[in-house]
Structure formats: structure tokens, C-alpha cells
Image (cartoon, rainbow, N blue to C red):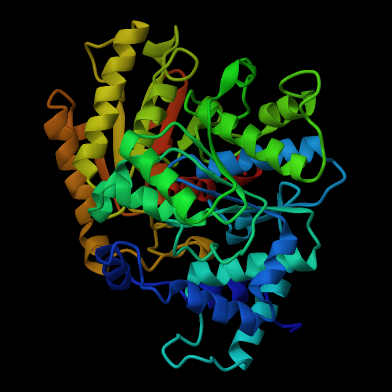
Length: 500
């Protein structure tokens, strides 16, 4: 054990990743590996030394949705830390930006490399030394399943008072959905983007998400499309949820200057308030007296931080350079991203003409890059009309499409390693070339010489450095389309200390 390092842990964990072919097979199946998904997860849990019933003691707030579930989880975490400063609060989210240990936080802080290594190998060794009961169950779980098991182990060992548990994908068959009785469940906005990717209807998606409802457990959601809401109501009745409450942001939340930027965060904040209030009431805490929104809740909303989501970062080393980071990877989230960036408070300013604007963009293969870029351009146009910006010339000076590979030598940072990219796509930069072609088709007035296709994040950052040295004034760089891309930029540009 003494010779095992954090790097060793990350390498072991990366060995559990699925390759591009496997992920494509899962996608074709609609995200349902099979009816064996939950039984297999329970088997792994028991091999680690726990029963599902023991997880109830973690006092879980379970959150899913197609967009906003990470931000909502961050709001709940911040609210509870401000409302109950003496508590130990666990937060489990995905994906991470720079370091995998970001996924498991206690009192808002990622567990340390030393802690990650310790708990990782405790789980790894138990799984490696215990034979499986069912021959068809793989000996070791996949990447996300393993991290989920590890999170349960960490929170149990650290004796947390509450666990905020974000679903990975879906709900019904998700690895997190083995807690028999959470304290409260919540579903954020259900968009149609993932529906298009999986070839499913909004009703299918609502069925999946509603799978986190549990008998006699209160459930909350936000306003949803009509068909989605009908399915959620049906699932709530089927699974005997205590109640299903539709939450609006309310004037008390609307008046708070949230710690997370973007108008869409009001809805997430409203849901977070309802979840936190319900949890505290289950603990006989009365937060309804006096103000509709207690000061501790307001402080939590103001103090919430969630890296890589509509985040503004002043470069600590490069004077006059500001990074705007948003891991938006759906059509709807990209619209929210551009509404945030193309605004007087962010990308439109009196000195606009003197600023050099860059867009660094990538999306995973299989997603509709052309549709994504159309959303970027259309929302930019609408925002410029709304705010009186210059519509006669391109909004961005340079557009960079780069692969998510971290370094120029073709290697990934250990925590950012991914096997989900088709090797052929990576070598030939098919996705990035297609994005460049789509951009020029959608924006024919844009100078082709200012569209750049690059093989790594490091190439992109270096190009920004080179091009900004030729210009005058400040430089603004929007990085979006992929959380993995955002994490790579944070790593390569040396932004971790100020961004994470």
C-alpha cells in the first residue's frame, strides 16, 4: 500500500473505461444495458462490503435531469453548508474538469489525492479479492460504477450527515439508483437534446428519469413539457412517491444574485431551495418561519460555485486575457451559454471593438455539430439585436476547433484520459474538420483563414497566445461544447488554482 500513488489509482481507474465501440453499443441500446444493470451494481456493492439498506444512512438527496442537475446539486450543497455549518456534507457529481477526485467532495472540497488513493484501493482490493456470485457479471465494474461505489464508501467512512447524489445517466438503470430510500428526490429540466442522440421520445426520457422516485419519498421537479410531466406523474404514482411537487423559482429566489451565472440558473436554484427545505424539514428543522427564504438559504445561493458552467476566469498569468468557460454540450445548454456570453455584462462592452474574441469549440462524435453551431450563431444574432451590438461583422475574431487531447505530444493528462474517442477520428480530426466546414457554411462571411482545426487543447491555447500578441486591447476566449474540453483548457492554461 505504501508504494501505491494517486497516479497508480488513476491508471487503474482508467483501465475500467469503455472504448468507443462499447459506448456506441450502449447508445444503440438506448442507454439501458439491460435489466441486469441494477442487480449487477448491487452485487458489486455487496462485494465491497455494504448492503443497499446501509446506504439509507447516508441521508441521500437524489437528483437527475437532462440539464442543470449538476448546478442544482451545487446549489443544494451550498445551501446546506450555510444553513447547517456544523454538518458534514457529501457531494457526488460527474464528470470532473481536471482531477477525478473533484467528483467526491466533502463540505465543498474535493477529497485530497492521498484520500482518493486510500479509498480507491480499499474498494479495488475488495473487488479484486472477492469472487462474483453471478458468472455473467464482469469481475470489475466499469469506470462510473466504480467511482459511484467509491463515493458510497468515502461518505460512509467519513460519516457524512447528508449526501447529495447526482445521477450519471438516465435514472432507472443508473448506478446511483440503488439507494432504497433517499430522503428526497428531484428532477431538473428535461430537454430534447439527449432524446435526439438516443433516438428516444421525451416520454421515454421522462420514464427513465422518473425511475429515481421511491415509495413514501417526496419528489420535486420543475415545469416540464406536457408529455414529460404526464409521464413523471405516472411514474410517481407507479413507484408510490409521497408526492410530486412542481417548483417555480418564486420572487424570493428571483431577487437573489446567484453565485452561478445565467438566467437558466434561476430555475435550478428554485428546485434546490425546495429540495434543501424538504430535507431539513425531514430532520424537524423548521425553515418556514419569517422570511420565505431564510438568510442562510440566500447566502447559500449567492455563495454557490460550480466550475466550468458560465464561469468567468481572469487569467492569472496573461494580462488582459479572460476565459469564459461553459461545458454546454446540448442545443439547449448552448443557447443558454450564448445568451450569457453575448450580453452587455460579458461579451458585449463599450470597448468591444478593441477586444479580440476567440471561440474554442469541440463536441463528441455522434452529436450534431452542425446543429450545435447553428444554435451558437443564431443565438448570437438574436442577442446582438436585443442588446444593440454590431451585427455587420463577425462576433468572433477567431474560431478554433480542437480535439480534447490534452497535450501537443498526443497524450492526455491522466485524469482526463478518455478511450471514448474513435482512434481514426482522432488521427484524421474528422469531427473537427466537419465542425470547421459547418461553421463556414453557416457563416459564409467569416474569413476562412480565421477558422483553425487543431489536434490538441495545448495547440489551441498556444494559438490564442500567438494571435492575441498581434492584436490590441483585451482578449476574451469562450470555451464551450464539451466539459472535457473545458477541463483541458483549465489544465493547459494553468487556471486550476483560480477556476476549480
